[in-house]
Image (cartoon, rainbow, N blue to C red; front, side, top):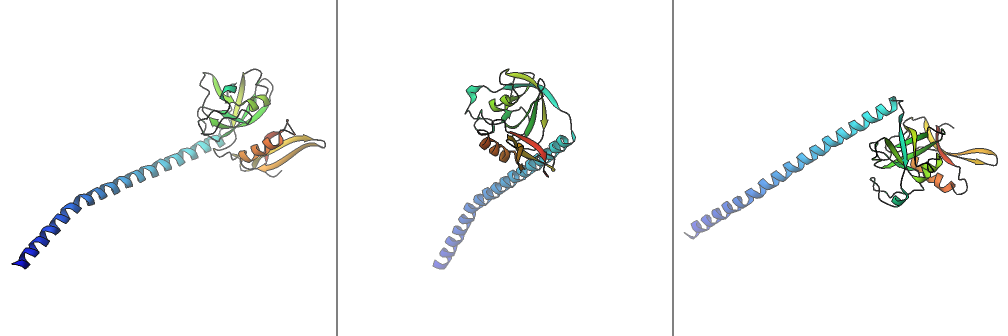
Length: 218
């Protein structure tokens, strides 16, 4: 009889264990299924983002059309404020705000009134005034003499991808400046950030220095 009771108790215990374990297994399966769904959705989003990026780059490389509109000057009150890219706005660097171009894209801005150009990196969103297509930092606006006017007609030309790398593989960035022996260049730099850093280091001794795009074989 004792053996029978022990066997009955053991069977009951095993049954209870199975009942308790079942919901846990079901929850685990549900969690795994949810995780797999999230992973699949993330993978699909990444594939779509990569496809969109490839399409945008291809259109940019093949489209020679220049965007035209009004450029405006960032307010000095925004100095050190956080931009849409997460970086702080520094009015003495060569940056800009654009409504749609990917963060990190480099554009050449050419002023209609004097033909002067400057290259800037998109780090913020804006401007949000009708007819304006780009907001320039104080340093960039000053290079094309826009700082005194505040607003001016310009052409925009996309010259890099979102990493600042020139769209044309045969081109690179250079820092050009005047010296006693004539015009000098430092480079090449494949990343705009590297050229901009060198530019910043040289500006005190050579205020007229500028970042330019040229043949990588120079």
